[in-house]
Image 1 (cartoon, helix red, strand yellow):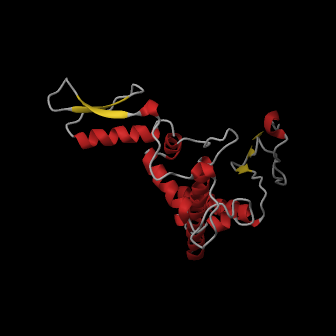
Image 2 (cartoon, rainbow, N blue to C red):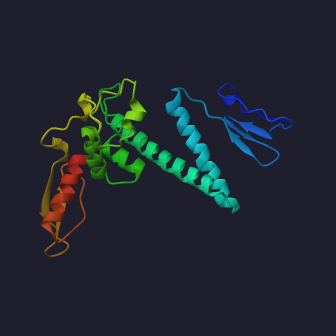
Image 3 (cartoon, rainbow, N blue to C red):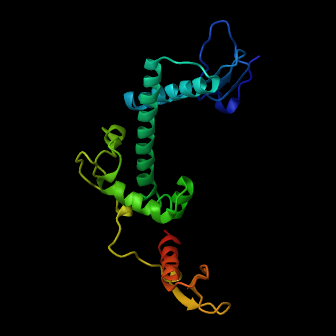
Length: 230
């Protein structure tokens, strides 16, 4: 008996496998009695999105092969390595473009994600995200950006390594000097609990970590100022 999750039933379909009925279906996923799991992908965009699905299929085949210990031919191994490498490159371009999109003005006129939120999602410090965004937005991103955004409204929004013109959204433009919210102005103070130690404090109530180095304390304060509300 097939159990269909009604919340997904109208969004996908189950592949036909002659002589077999899936044990259960959940959204795009179907579990079959012979141990196979199928996941139906739905996409538009023609070849651009189809090629991602095709390379992802190769990656899954490679995972299955590595798990089972099967011996593969030289040609199959070369094909798997090639497709996996291309998929990694395409995913990097997609991540770059999502980062640009996240800092563009949303419906409320503000960037869709703050620097700190972006840093949390991709596992790096917000200042690293800021530098990466600047590099991508000025044409230093993936060469696969053209493949990703060609013939779409995003095609001409930023410069790319192959010379596309830049029309950056206003929300991504950085002034020469970062604007500091008066509610987040930091200074370095002596820390009375340890001789020779200093600490950064902010008008919002934030405090840094005690350190014996004024430069380190100042840097911590500036990082807080630039990232607190951005």
